Image (cartoon, rainbow, N blue to C red):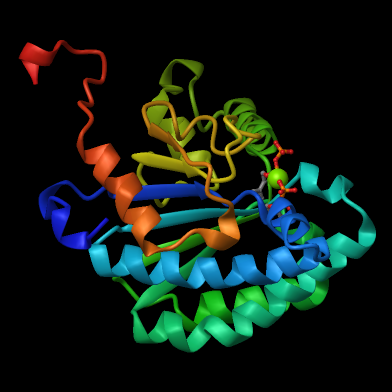
Length: 244
Ligand code: IPE
Ligand code: IPE
Ligand code: MG
């Protein structure tokens, strides 16, 4: 699908992607799972560049979940190495496109090299303002919400917050994602139709889009198709059609 078919006034502000299917892609080609992850890194670049070009303000990519720590050590090690090499390689692309990198998740669990590289790229791109690219790494929505609840409870205990003041805005401010708006469009590749502990609070009113395409095969045309599908929908937020 061609980019020209999109309505430029209705580009989602925040797109989140569950990049799934790397392992199955590799298996289909008779390759090791890690090859699928390598190929997936290339799909990331195209998605990032296209989103920036289309005027998406926030792109959040699910790269590694809290549950993914249960995978074989060899696969985890490869994913972490791939993260470090991709960060090094992609810094010029981020600078060229004026994109600011951020990360959400329990980053302390990442290997030190990954933490260091991540911190460097985040620092180097912090003044870029065309788009925020957030990597969800060692991220789980339940872990995030538990952290929010603990922090809010602490404020109540210390007397800096009244229980009656706790509302949507207070929760938003305590989330790892406090700097971004709610998700408008959530895309999951590989045919699985589940959320897998990703941004549970933030997708409350997101439009969900599932595609059979495996992540390593995901190209600009697939992204444009997803946004086109999004633009065809009526977002009512509880109201009636007539009220919109
Ligand atoms: C997504 O691809 C990448 C990560 C979860 C890190 P998978 O590795 O889950 O690929 P499938 O689902 O096994 O095909
Ligand atoms: C979700 O994919 C996490 C990422 C894409 C990083 P998984 O492949 O881990 O999800 P499940 O376990 O099949 O639901
Ligand atoms: Mg998977």
